[in-house]
Length: 508
Image (cartoon, rainbow, N blue to C red; front, side, top):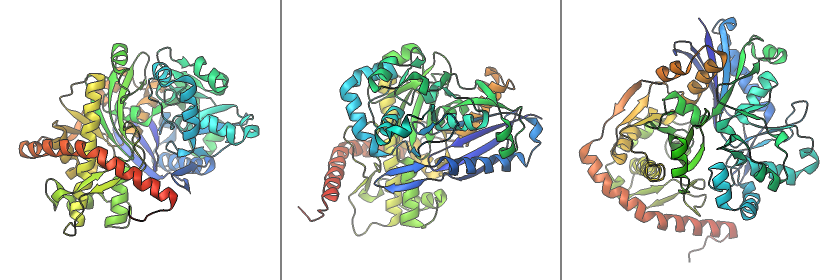
């Protein structure tokens, strides 16, 4: 029996999964993503710490199977973040997290020079500080001498493949998270790179997802326990790997990926790409395969909000989604007047949104059950808002939404989403969406699987949440109230943020 290994290098956890050629999952192992919090939203990842965890997880997997039967390995990862490596493959800087705010001024300067419309037209991306090109410019500004020693910039999944194979390559989906990739031409943009003073040779070769880029090297084999002849394949941005896992490589499918961040995503044809381009609230990028694109709307703090609430307000420990759901079910529709706006980190599509969440309507009779309900309702309203924007901008009209990710373990939350969105919600069979998608790409690149196999293995769901008519009717009005209160919540958060920076917390 042949095996495939998929790695999911996420913002908060690293997972590794082994599946066989029939798509059956044999084992999943995981560990927290090691990071260093430098305060004020600034977070970095050290290469040595990340690699140590990845090696340990791979060794744990291969100890349970016949390593000689492993055909391929691929990695999916968070977007935007990555490492600059020298000609010896050594990391020159810690990797800035995708959400690290210290690149804001540089991103603003770049937008001023090139213009939002130019950047949007070339890359499909709305102007934002998170993308890789701003990080490259920050590294150069921070330490030019060290920057000049750089041989390659590697997105996280590309870096893992590089550590395994010694080959620098990136797939289309991760390339399009750099804000330096011409998504129509599938090449690095000379216009953007020239304006930034960057050489295209610094960037890895763009290839379709699931391309065999090399094989496991001798040193990597000794570290991981993988044989040297195992195919190393290009992976994907984690959201696009999840899309592959549920069949959202077809325009009729809509994915709700529920992780630290939450996305609503659909595949787009070339014509669909052009139709969505004027709608700045929709992030457009290159999908995994040639001439295929995607439209995506994102809430950056979905799972993060739930984790914060459980840790700080309920159990004081790591996420217990079951307990969160049980508490929320003890309240009622509308959470007795409480409203939660989950913008712990700047919203990707709300202009001027601050890095602050807001709770409105808190009274002395409210309980933590009401707070839990308000949290899940607020997140569900945001999921509906993301879906509405995708429908308007990309012209999609889904009949069902396919959900994948850790948050789908919370049945209460998934039912609320179905009620609020007014669409049935199917929880995908493969809950390790990004890891399973990476394993499929390893199968494609190694020759073990065909595109027909990928379509077949992406079918199926474990359970479906149907719309409850009475609750949907109630939530229709509450959703409109959420939208009406949104400007008030954002302004309150902005004012609180200004007062905090001044050190002035006195009442006005």
